[in-house]
Length: 447
Picture 1 (tube, one colour):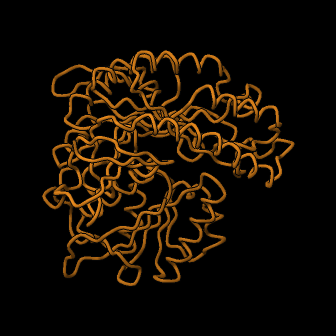
Picture 2 (cartoon, rainbow, N blue to C red):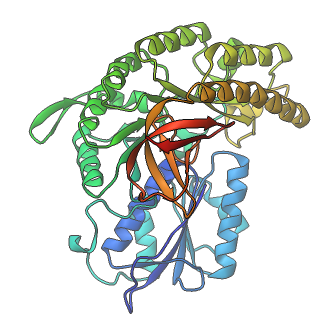
Picture 3 (tube, rainbow, N blue to C red):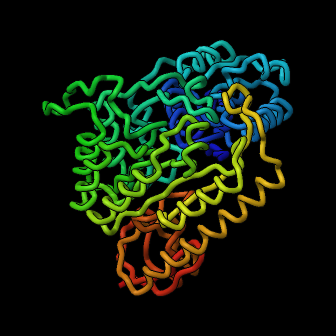
């Protein structure tokens, strides 16, 4: 994802920073932190390369395509502006960046907020010392005003063979629960209506802290995903959990969904269903146990929406193992699914595995996978016709309103389309009756 940065009100003589944010929501939060610090120190942001005094590019280095996109963005910024600071996940491969673009001013890795500011100061001296009254209390956000991502930890302790996130971002480091809740409260007070909880492994939150007790407003709270979700659920906003692994402790979250404290939605990256492929990926391989757990969650919370992502064409994947994956899809009947043909990642253990699947076969399997899932998604959406549901307005156009239900995360899931002009604003909640369903979206009218 490329996020263009819009400029706040410009100061007459303030240095101006161009900013390009690439990659996942976790990287977007990093960009927000850097922009908040820049704004605190009196820098302004520029919507164009030409008007900027320098450009910061927050890169992604997860897969080869993301590396290429990042290098292209750096090259474009150098060509259009000439003064570029590089940060983010690709920054751990400084030599590769400098080989491709020797003119960059500085290169830092992910979460290197202080190092980025030092590089900015070296190129553009700070206008003045920071003053808190220059900033909105929630900081600078790159999302629409009514929803925001909140990152609860950095890094990951898993060693999946296809992934280099631990090499890029390090081991799991959880934020103190009180710090997370203070940020969440500031966001809601600023008008955020939906908080999207993100990390590399949300269900592992607090494990590195041994789930020690912290305090928020004098109240003791254990650093664990369940008390964190329960405390977030006390805020007047939707709470949506992303990147949740199917650990046993997730069972404790289902009652919070049943009681309406958090949305009945789980984003759970399962990746495959074949036990042998999962072992080669260094992922949990108990597929039958996953199906049992999903069934139990649905019995307890019939409204639960499950999203997942999968990889097809992993090295050595046979036709029989791909058939196992399709059978799992049919059994699991997940609501929202993303699929990616395997892409080799430099530095990942899977890069050295034998028996690569030919690219043409990867694409053929991807097409078959998506067709199976499309039939499931189409049927599940059709089941919602005639139902009433609360939706959150994202966009208001002349002839229609674009909204989302509890089943839809922004940018990756579907929408609820309300035809006709309505006096609504982004961030409004409205009850609608679903009148029609498509392959990905629903249509409704205010009830």
